[in-house]
Image (cartoon, rainbow, N blue to C red; front, side, top):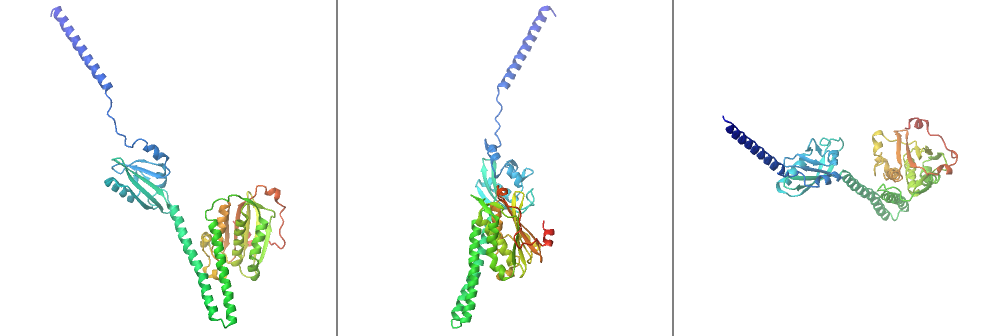
Length: 402
């Protein structure tokens, strides 16, 4: 091959290489300039941000019922587990909404077996709506407390109606008896005394219902003022003095004098008076009821100790319920309404305190009302002095009390 032919082939080869290089460069440039195909986001813009700030349980599901996004409360409540809805009923509603696009709202009960957190069944409301062509949004609200409050309110109204009907009916019957016995002065006197007893019972019930309705919300006392515990105890003893005297029950006091708390005097007085009245009502004749007060840390404790019938262990947790009585057969003779201890519980709550009970069936009970003390109590407090006639707490109660 001569030199001219070699030169021609070299030139052709160089042109080919140059052409290939130019073609590769153009292809590379075209690929770099080509924009990627836009990928449609699974969640619409802003939805994830909204879900992250919601207090309610929110869940977004795709066309296969898989959880795309869920708020933190949804996991905490147990609505979502392992990337799926826990409630089969809620899942069925989601599928119905996806099928016809109609918003649905329903109330469900989530049992402890459904939820990741054990506990009693929860009542929830679920609102399910389509979120675009592929997604469904479920909003779940816990309504358990609201339903419990509604149930308590219904029971309260029913119990009030029943309790009011009893003395009203008795007064009506006694009035008819008085009318029929108009010519018998002795019978009229006897029936009139019974009417007075029933009217007193009715008045006491109405008054306690009014007191309880004022305390219903457990809201803190708006404008607390110093309350002298000595005055509260004196009023409580005076209120029950006649009932105690009729049963020959001694009302005694002991403990520190001059203690003060911050609160509402009428509410604290009502609470302590109810404790004393309850102790007198359920104590045997010729026994005693001891009122003790002392300073314990940041609180003042007022204890009412009786030697009455006591409370069975299985009943202790229920005694603060409205209209609940340990011994329903005795409430007619004691004149109890079943509201006194409920009032005590609410007064303790509104004052930021608590009420505790110690009891042994057949030996007696100790109710202790603990309330925050007045900040300046040390300047107001006098040295501990036991009141005249005070006796120590019964040994068996002092040893067993928590």
